[in-house]
Image (cartoon, rainbow over the protein chains, first blue to last red):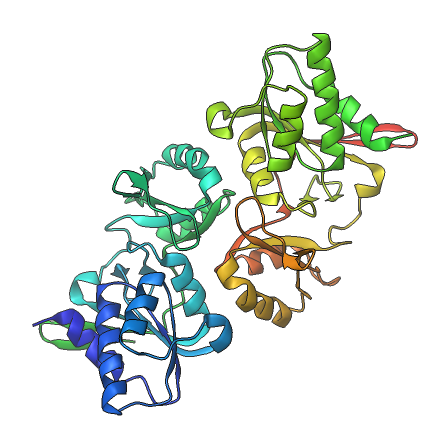
Length: 222
Length: 222
């Protein structure tokens, strides 16, 4: 069973005709984009206008003939559907391991509802199992690396091949580890006092609901 | 009497040989750059290495043969000297009307001491006499303009001629007004919950001292 597909299929039911919809980035969000394209082709949905959270999603959606517009043309959005890397039971998220965290957060904050979709492996008791992506301005990469090392966050500059990854907004990503004895919200609050931090992958209150696909079926939060 | 020159001259006395120095941006900081170049030429100071807070300062300093390096090569810095647009008696600042706020804040946070220099017109009882610059990522300009209008901040996109100003880091600037009934720290805290805000021109605790030139002489804070 493809749990990413199952989560996306359940989320498709939340989209109604005439909605303005934000499309997420990553493998689970891609399933939703494909299902939405199929619904539009069958005529099950109509008059949908979408905007994307990354250049990659933009290209995929256009290739499937989904009507796309810019966020500027559409906001506020009715609904955004996107994946996450980690989800806790309070609907706090870590996102951005795909590198699109900044546009994702901008689009999701501009949406009345944001439904996060995932397979059950993404549901965690405590955020910080894996790294937290921190998007930083290029000028500050070395200074922030040193500062985060002093904070015991073990920063790693994300690479694409032999070069630092460049985000859609022209920034870099430092992946940091949340120390096990600290709450992610406190760490993020401290991080953000450093100039050059553009955004983090911690989404404390953006998600309004989660649709989690498990081997036993769909679980919804709340 | 040129008060900007007087403030810069007093600050020059804080620079000792062998220091790593951050050079600010704007008309008062330019006076300091010229005075420093003159001291180096006369041999009154030696073995100084500097880094700049903007491409404009970088060019000026190089044209005057000041030994320049990148922040990455020099940090932590011993001292940064820079101007400000508004200064209160608690050494809180508004900066960035020259457009260089992000690099300025990065450099100043990477300095053991940051001395702000200004003429007396910059000393205010309450920050927010003029606009607060907010550096934003290009993708979010329209969404943030709408959000700041809702917050009654009267945002204005800064222009350079007929085009939006592009900062050294590739961002845009929205100049906002602090409502008279609100403290700037609260407004900034609320602003920064919006994804796409890269940095603001509010410097709550970066400055370690101020040198203010008045018609009656130099005033130092603290």
